[in-house]
Length: 103
Image: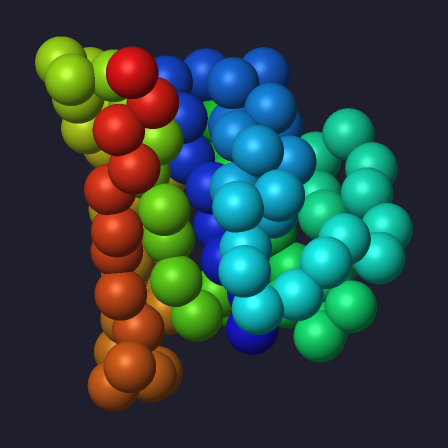
């Protein structure tokens, strides 16, 4: 499973990847880098870049939106969110977007 993590900015997306991976009760961290975490069960948490060219062809099973209670991520990163939904949503009936309140 590949999970895209989108926060208000790329730095927060990278931090949120590691944070969310640590919350995963089904597996433990096998390997981590600046912008992704690989779990022992094969799940990958991937920080989503603000560079839309890097997003083309990226296949995800899920997106987790991370923000405080204002949910500014929906406005600031709407291009990336829309592109990922367009690229991924039609290919998998189980595909989903989740929100995580960072406050």
